[in-house]
Length: 251
Image (cartoon, rainbow, N blue to C red; front, top):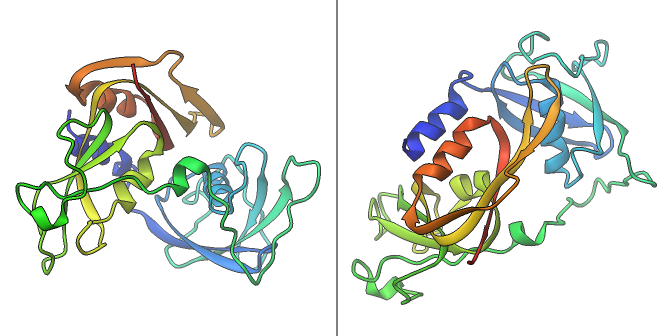
């Protein structure tokens, strides 16, 4: 199995549609690209994460742009006849916190988890571009990415680039979608995830067959000796995670 095979499982649910969500509490509109079969509960989860709220303790009530029809949390966008370009209204009805969360319409929520706010080290292979070399250690333990810059005007265009991530807990979605080229700072197309001499496990939330949000995690850490990626891909393919997290630690 390859990384492309795993990417394919994420888009099999069909081509996404563009949906705008107007949140009453923030007085702002947020834009999403979602499959038509996305559950309303899943949308609530993504919106909570965008607002930096715990998705397991936060609930939203969604309705159409006129506010006349409230959507069932276990229904899908398709079942509610939501089309690309539609705007939905979201109202926070329960946060699960002792005090209600307060939002200022004049500034964005910027609080980040420590492992998401830290930028991983990146370097271009020194054999290709010595001027862009940052790290000389030939062996990086833990998680490592390989990818290629897609900017045709970049010096590293379509060159194999090595991104040593190392140890810690990382969002797979951010690694795939937000990894930047060290030379031009444009997005990189990640072509491979590899683990070297480390313990690791995958966990995250997913929508079960009944439309409910659940959490799945590996009870024990898996051990990788040498460099490998197949078992990681298999674990990711087992469950349709919503932004899975990968935890990597040394022996």
